[in-house]
Image 1 (spheres, rainbow, N blue to C red):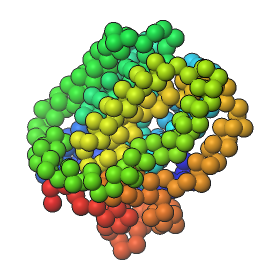
Image 2 (image 1 turned 180 degrees about the horizontal axis):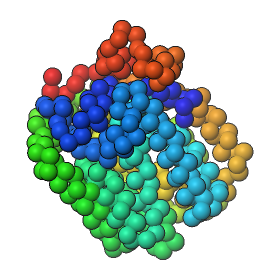
Image 3 (image 1 turned 90 degrees about the horizontal axis):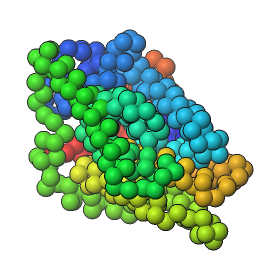
Length: 360
């Protein structure tokens, strides 16, 4: 994943740093202060004393790596090592690794782990607990993630997938999400924090720009939804169809999860990032389903990983951006001691992504 995506800091890393350094207050009043709802990652950063921009990025990279390992081990224990290998390869090549690594400092590593846990957790109380984590990490995306995870969980279970099983699972995740968001609201009220903006207000204020935004690079936007996974999914379907092992019913349910990701993408300017986070549960379920339908050899999976690594990671936020735009040496210097060319962290972090901020 690091080979094909490189790594970089999110363009608004200074805002995240200010928020983590001043818990209990609103140090960034204005339309962008909705990032204070990403409370749990900031709490972890403050608790570990990692609140400067380069420290947040470094910690974010570590948590991403820990999340990937945790998910793979969890899948191995529940579904076997072959399923775990498929999950590891698909997550490494999925655009969610691209957007997470190229915008380090966002709450995405926490979101990925919570989204995966909602698929893999068996006990109801654990599902509720991870829903609460999601509610304190990114409650808006969490609504769609909970629904996608309910579908993904139903697909990976051995019983037939029904609307009832999906709904029952979604209720548990939603209960946790509301608990987490409720805890966040209590935090705001106790500390007299009033947000000037919200992600919903950004959407309503800029809705007129969305259609034009999505027309900038529609082909790249379509490719970036799954990146090299498009090829893997196509090859798998061809192999599984020939051996009559393809469970079309379960794949149709997974398409519904993809539709939830599309909905999230069409409502936001962070196209690939939002789609890829909402569909983390779907990618995990796809990997498990692939391992069940075709006995992919470990050498075949290694070849897939190598081919995918040769394709630079790209994502769209209107225009297309990718690993080729990210100078590795500058990022390494920044992670080591916070040094950046020119001295301004914001200007440096924004340099590879010259997009127009919505509403400006």
